[in-house]
Image (cartoon, rainbow, N blue to C red; front, top):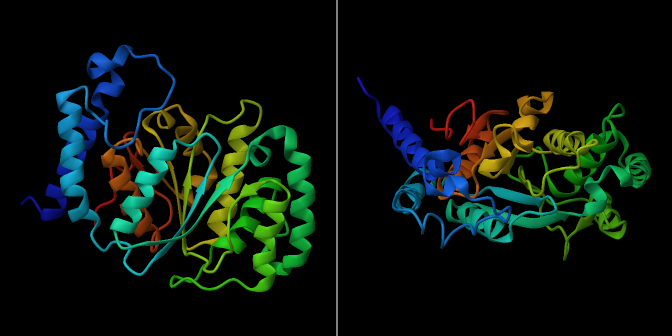
Length: 293
């Protein structure tokens, strides 16, 4: 007998396949070589009937799938340099549409993610770790440690969220002051969920390990972490490579946020992360297009 869950899974698979099919070579856009990311919402699928239908279908079904999934939950959004701002805004709207509250948007700077600045990251991380006591793992590597430090400032392992202490608030001030994080305002709430949104391809000489370290550190400090990227980031892209690392057992991953379907999957992955770690979802996710259950 076909269950409702199987029916929903099939629906999501269909509209995700439609949304990404032409990108993977199934239509006239397969010959496009423009490296610039496409706008996230209004023009999605506009030049292709199948793409337009997929985007419209996801827009219609998405609210039904995500309704109240993040009700009374808080989410901290962390972005990597090079992220598409339209996509980031669309993701934020998807989170709030599911009932979630975004506690803050934190932008990692180039200095945080380029190998040439590792000495700065390591020195500051060592200094801040001594101020946080046992909150930071003593055996953490440079970027795992800085991820944990960012995590203790903006995230919490308490499902209901909580307010930061003065010691924890000082961390974000230090990261901003050192030019490693861009953030305006003060952190009034720490969120149980963190959405890490990928941007430009990391540097070939160690960039992947930087991303993996920061994601792992955030994973230690939050109830759940979702690392999200575009369709191009999946497969052999940066998100696909992250899925081959040990951190993938601790954080969920979603590729396809440049489509409406991928953004729906991201919200469902955030909701799932409240109780279950890991999972690879999206256009090339080994665990299916989206977590449904």
